[in-house]
Length: 429
Image (cartoon, rainbow, N blue to C red; front, side, top):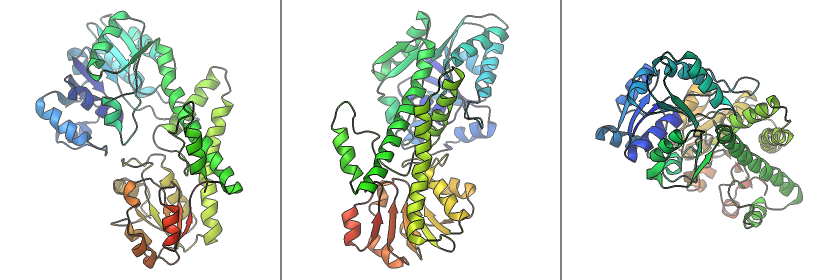
């Protein structure tokens, strides 16, 4: 099937590559000419394991190509996936002007039936507005359907999430559109949930917000564990053995961040308010998330007293492992706090160094994880990269002013660190 992906950011590019991988003919469109040129040259603007190779393979096969024209997409493709950015406003609501712009561009060139698919994460009832916009600005009055098909990608494992999804949600009212969407997703052999448009849009925000709430819950439990001298790892394990609860997203840490959870939680709170509902529970989850970061900083200040003129070794800058994304990264937020309080920050991340340097030029970037320990008053683990477990910690200890380690992800073995002579602080332990 001929498919257009309008917007070649994280969601659009990964979705387009996976559609091409299963045999569809995919055109990825972006208004950024420099980005399109770069993509044609084989350069992927972000790190996602396996994506660069998949794009290269499908470009070579002719199943994946890149362009700048929405008109070309409308003319040549039956299904048009809108995957443009939906950034937050200052009040937490969603900026939808990119979505509206694409809807108007589609309307201006639509001459025969097309399925317009909202892939971007959007507030409930956006699909209705997209349909209204196309109807209003359409020159030829051609037939079309609007479908909601939310993405459930996790950065760092997006290809696996797309190729082997838990479920595919299709929100539509037209049998014609539903059949086309089923055909698109037939190669994935995964259960499909067919809903109305509004329910599909709510599913994405409801899912991400619930997962964020689950993390905030275990982080609050972690604070109770610290106060009562219990171990949050054991508490989480005991909870997770209950099939009704499950173990996933019960990993205590220094807080959630990234491009999805903060934006989606804020947006869902605003969506609820606009619909006359006060989502107090979700507001509290966001508040606990902020509190968790401050609680962690308080531990560090408690040991170092003043951060001014101290050297802090920081392991991790990306918001999570297996990505170079620093948007709303708790690691970057910690780094910024350290710098604001007068500390020197020696930092390392396997993938996010270039982006971090642009955002915080005062960081002292190191060539390896071991190097962050040189002259450090403490080392902070801020991102859960597996390779940090295997650093030469004994060599690092010799380089440090004092052997203090603050593990914001409970990544390291507490017993081993103690045996090696470190003073070790985890989360909820």
